[in-house]
Image 1: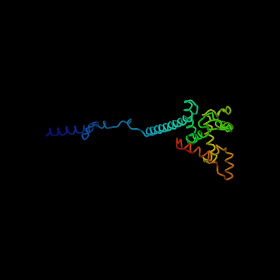
Image 2: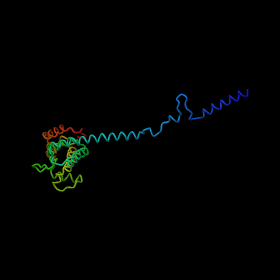
Image 3: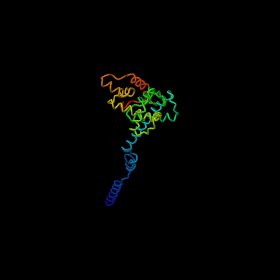
Length: 229
């Protein structure tokens, strides 16, 4: 009898020791608890996910801008702007940058350049308008003062990047003057805001030929979807 009790006590002791062993294998799965714990480093945090999404968004934007720049360069190549390649690339990037900065579509800015100067940065009109976007020196000087651009006389407008900066800012200024109506702004760009204001006060329509020329050129480019324009 004593032997039987001793055997039972020994069996109970062995079973209790097995239950207290936290790393003992699970007989149903054949692995220990420690083996199924996932390391914390393998779980991507929400911040990591946001960062990844932001990087993908920036990459897509960069690709889109590169495509726009490439298409602008193609148009300048057709127009024989007389600028060396390095300056054409800088100019194309400036057009995209300035258009976006002023809430205008790059294809609209390019269309104005095509209609005004055919892409020739040394163009001069019979009324004295100069450069790519054909600005009058008085207008250019006023805009340069507002934008903090150094004014070195009318020849400043022959700098293609400065000309685009000033011309794009002027087009935005006119659009704001006419409550965001870019068509009226284009008419004022061509005829002068004073003349357009007088026509509007009389209830007359604005001249449409220049508007149609620019819009047709913009449709041919179709570089990017417009923003505020």
